Image (cartoon, rainbow, N blue to C red; front, side):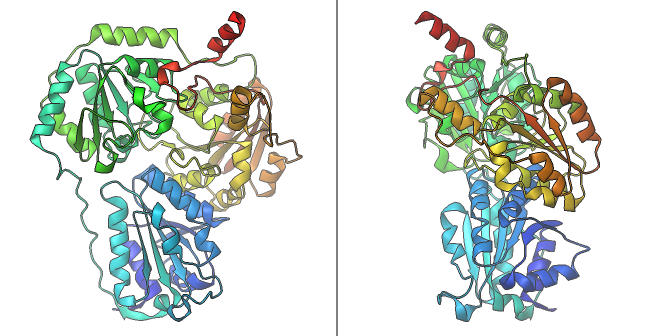
Length: 563
């Protein structure tokens, strides 16, 4: 059948099973939006307040559902406003297709109104970027984009389409989406045998779970492995939920703000089994001394990650879930009673601690966990609140903790929460932000209200840029250069002005009633929670230090007393 380019784009979205897109219209992409009007009963379009919000929403939708997220923007500034969201998705391996429209082919390269080479701009932060200047190539390019975004190590793909292509007509023939097979072509029996031998020989094994285990939906296999070989498990920020935070073998996060048990345990183990992690500097600290007493077995779908940051003793390249299935087929049950008892003793000796005499982020997050029974999807922005959300909420399932791990994008969380709620309407969705982050994209509260779905925004409001201030306190002799937000911004009034219910929380006894009211609401609720500006995130490892140099507030007090 003869369709316009714009209609072909929408038909290709339908082919790929897309039911929701996020975007903001403009002149160059008007043909696509005109086509979306005709398909409004089949594809829901969420109009965000800013294109960056659309990219974060598409990202959150993808992380929460495991499907490809889709965002749309017009040419020029519309397209460039997607860049931060695309980079966020790239760093965290999130499948996303960003579709932009550019000026007509005859106007390219002439500094035309709202012309920009967006395909060139995003080349370093996408798996692939295309510009379509010929309608004959349009449908196949869209199909390739979805395949590339989802296959192997997932990531974002951008498709830029000139306006004349969206208005031209061409014969369209529907196709079924290409089948995506799990990457196992590089897996050799000898590699599996070597891994099994390493695991069977270990007396003090430790499992470290990264985001790749979440992406590959390997939660069941990770859990079976841990219990089969009787090994403690820690995770990265991106790996949360791949192994239940309620499991007795779980020791908490690893790295800069990881638990003492995880950091010390990894430093003491004799085998570290790494599942889908790229050894971020925030995890390893000093990479040369990381897991210094252990042999390291790394399993990752991306061969480029092997030996990139940490030199390992053995590796298997391929899909984590499929590789674990093969390993489990050959692994006998093992018991490491003495080792697990030692880890349990450390968990009891070094619990996470916070001040229970005043309103704090950890208290609010623990209360949220209690009231939701750990069954909510939690999104965050970046900073102290992000670390508290990682430490004090226990994630039982994958795809329930959505955060910007690699890029560290302030302003990510609210858009991601909207995307998650659109993709998973059955789940309570809560975004946890600091006041500095909330300022970045708080205009998306209007989007949440327009969507008409319940969503909770918690602002841990300390009137400072908390994590930066913490570093200034510890490492810059308390020179608080431009980190104090001492203005008259009132988040309650602003949120109410955008149509949301808003509640200010200033005391510990206010927390539970406010959370219960928010959880029972049928629309967006903003909780503006005032906490002290000098609260810090502990434990902590200084940048570049050994992870077993981890310290907490108690250690700092002891050091001060010994001086």
